[in-house]
Length: 283
Length: 93
Image (cartoon, rainbow over all chains, first blue to last red; front, side, top):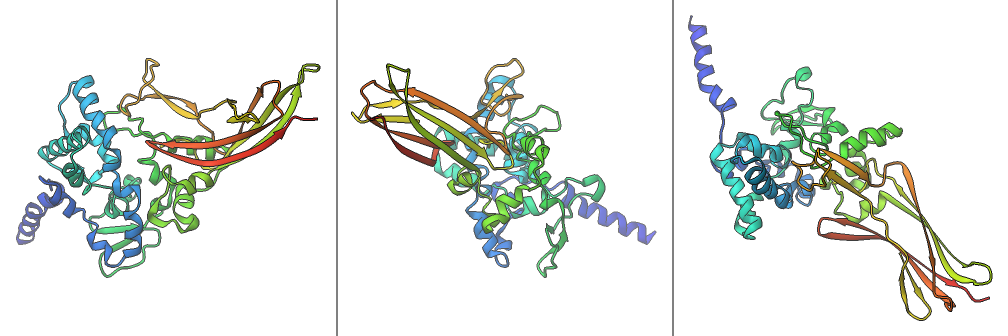
């Protein structure tokens, strides 16, 4: 009986902390999912990440998210801002918000609208605290085989080698090395209600047009491993990777056309080879 | 793609744009991610070479011309010039 009582007490104390943690401020949420502690041991990786668009996943996409809030929810669907609806965007742009209270979700939505419509820099600064950081990729989103391997353990960091660390529990993950991992957000997103979001269709093209034609490289091969790109994840906004993914073969010649009239004519034959593992352009 | 004649006249030889067109279920062009349910793929497919040809007649008295081929990638409000190739053509016998 004493044993049973102990079990019950533990359950009542720990359950709210694990399952019902709900944050009412951006600062508290950002602190709970902070990448600050990662910096001391992983400074190089952290610096790389800071320069990436993953570090700006909310503030770089404010226009589109604002349009969903104002036009999609406000005018077309005629629905109030709620966690269920905002997570259509935020499950990828700031998945930490799954632990936000409804009040915080409304605050975040207001900040997004203010940041765009009123060009409010203070609002933008607040929103910059939300992003796709270490915790998102190395814990939260690493669970694409939940039924097979279970949900990610809180406080455990999943990586390609599972090297032990004195700072936190570590586990090797094959998922984090796969294109399917990136495809969670870089492809068509299906929320629980099935009303799809066509923000990004890249992963479908990778699967059907690249792998379907014999391609074997992963997202990580080109966007991380190649040229030591690491956690900078370059893409559509970096000229070097854009150029690397596209080859131009231009053949230019001049002839005199129409016998007798001899009209000077320029003929240009161009070949554009998409060397990327997905359609281009795409987001 | 442009041609500049020896008299300095700039002639637009043509432009080809590659993009992904988002649509709703009714077949109307849409820009909002929540509205897009289908696409028309006008992009460059992976592992393939897409060929384009441009044939442009120049003014009859053109003796030489400079042809320029430019590939530009637009990403949001940014624009990246990826390639620029120029060649001088001589039409004099």
